[in-house]
Length: 224
Image 1 (cartoon, helix red, strand yellow):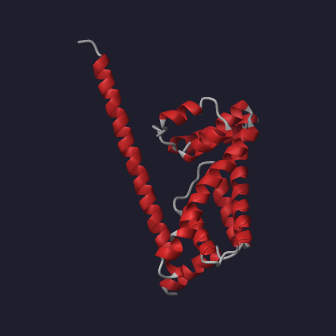
Image 2: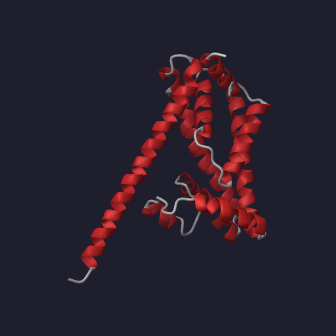
């Protein structure tokens, strides 16, 4: 099969609501909540879905159904984490400490304003925390405080923001930039790669700046 044929098949997955996209999205979102996030996949799906919506290929009701399936997957995954803490499920705790915790970044990038708001989490601050990479810690924090409604609303809000950004980009820029519908997958992967590189660059320079400030402050406080 030619490259265009493979790309056309990938495009058909999000052309309408179907069991295939429903199963894929539910599983990806569920396991993503507990730490097994696959790069590119979800971002690419939303970009392509937005493109399909913008070109009139994907009906809006079908997009809503696709998004609701993804939301159900995220809520399911977050519930697993939540009740693993509430019920004290030892196997899940051992699984988290052995396989998930070592994979988390040791020095998480958190803007000071967001860090202060996380000291007393609300659904909005939970959503912001999730968007900056604190998905698992926020779920476990809400588990310890037994605030399931806060967690569920935080998951909902962050999903609306995160998914909405990719859908809007795919729906507005996609039809203008992509020369052929079959190439939307390649353009999406390229766009997500650029986004990853920009995000890593911002985090790198922000950390260097923070470390420099700490070093300067430490030197200024040291006795002569």
